Length: 219
Image (tube, rainbow, N blue to C red; front, side):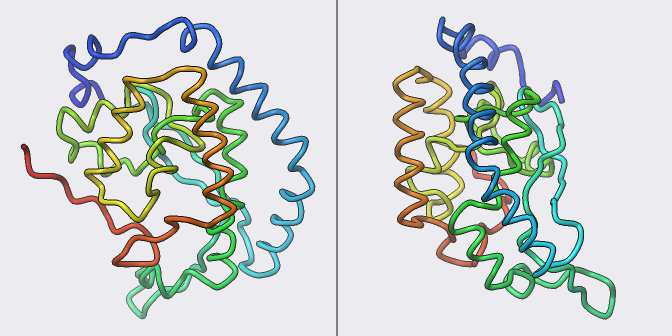
């Protein structure tokens, strides 16, 4: 993954005291508390996913994290495995069920990611982990989103989520990288609760899920 993160990008992000000594322990404590407090919701959701969508209950996918290091992301399934006659998966809008939409709109499908936080793959707040296929498509500015651990929630998620363009989303990710602080993280956490309650920015304007990123024109 080194080719996506050059020496220049390493110099641009300098970790402060909060990021070096407080953020990671804080993330672990928050994730553990979240698992304990939300365990009833996690169990009920798992049972409903099993009934509504079958096995497996947990969706696993490889995603790039800090410095592009690949890890296995855990989420609750929200789609069926329906395929066409050629064995290819049907479009997202056909596989995403009403139940799956409810899971996404309430962000219940994200709860297994608390395990990723405890493992050290993710942080509570940071740029959302995206697909491996996007790595070679980033320009130098966009690649800076990988200078920190990906997050359960992030600056872009409380400022538009899937309703904004990829370019706007990446700009907000990099803004967060350059403005990490204790107050900023807790502000984002509080805004996330508000966003989830209001179910804002769940889908893009073009589709029920975010359309694939195909690269940006260099400015």
